[in-house]
Length: 469
Image 1 (cartoon, helix red, strand yellow):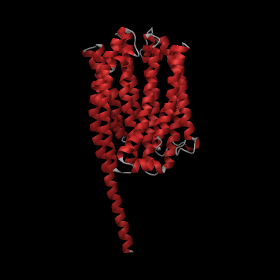
Image 2 (cartoon, rainbow, N blue to C red; image 1 turned 120 degrees about the vertical axis):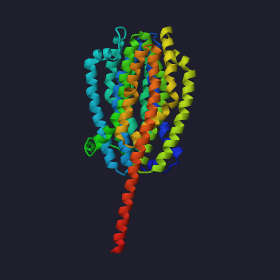
Image 3 (tube, rainbow, N blue to C red; image 1 turned 90 degrees about the vertical axis):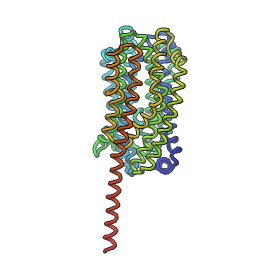
Image 4 (cartoon, rainbow, N blue to C red; image 1 turned 180 degrees about the vertical axis):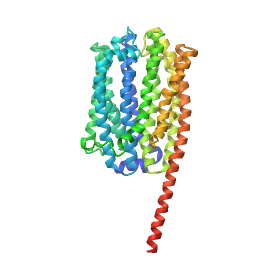
């Protein structure tokens, strides 16, 4: 590993190491947040709530393909950071090439699939007769960017594993800034409306992916996307998928749960669906910042784990948990107090605004603990513990959320109580994450202690043999 990267991961004071890694990651997430808000904001300026509802309905389908990028991004980051910590740079190159080519092929196949089945997909995810035209138009155009989206999402994470968080940030900033600049031009000036939002998204994703490709083929990168370095064997595919699938399942289940709640909320009208979509956007202000903190520390924790440095691992984790709680508390107060102007920026219709305002304040109830949840998730992933990662990933938006949502519908079946199912789930998921982390820590670091004892015993035997000779 390059000297400056080793210094940060291994030798820098814990606060400096954490902030060096999380600041670019948080900035990247802020750009993702602004990018997600921009489409809805500028579509909202058309004063057509059906367009807002259509974009909200189409978003879950788009999230599925972001989840595929996360599969290779989080899985690849976890494996590569551990390989670099263990001093295996060639295997790190093989892993990055595997993530690039496999993700690109899946993206091309997915793009063609959406083009063929766009209308049935929109019906399935909750589009009504009033919104299906806008939703299918948006999704069919956005599908053009799926291969680039997967590559961009993958390597915005993977590049951090080689100690280049600034490079990872720049790619995200480029793609999102392009999208944000083009949105008002294409939606409001050219009057392309939903199609304009989709075209801006496509162009932004293409530029982000191209930036990462240029970096990966340059001499500045220690990773590779060359086809000759592609390897799926030697536990590379299994190592990526073991952590990547649980990580991506969380996003996939988030998409599925959004589809379910959109269909439940559709019973209360399209204005309720529009309000729910905007409330989710407002809640993302807290969630995305804390996801940035969690993903930012994962390479650092993975390196400490691969280097078997228990003391530094725990120091990084403790500092990150305290920081996450402080950030969560501050952002919760800001978003709760500022819910009205935030929702008003997206919705002008009085009925949709009332729904959005109510839902936004309900969603923010989970704010105080959500940062702890994301730190613990990434701490578990950094150890390569596949089963706990899988359990946690299928729990927050699946095993815990969907049953809670169904129970709330059965008992209450009001829009407010349907929204309340998310914060209730987040508190349950954080409790589960704490239990799983304790189990994972005791198991994996106990193995370190056993291995250290074996190595010390072998060294003693070799020394004794040499002395006797």
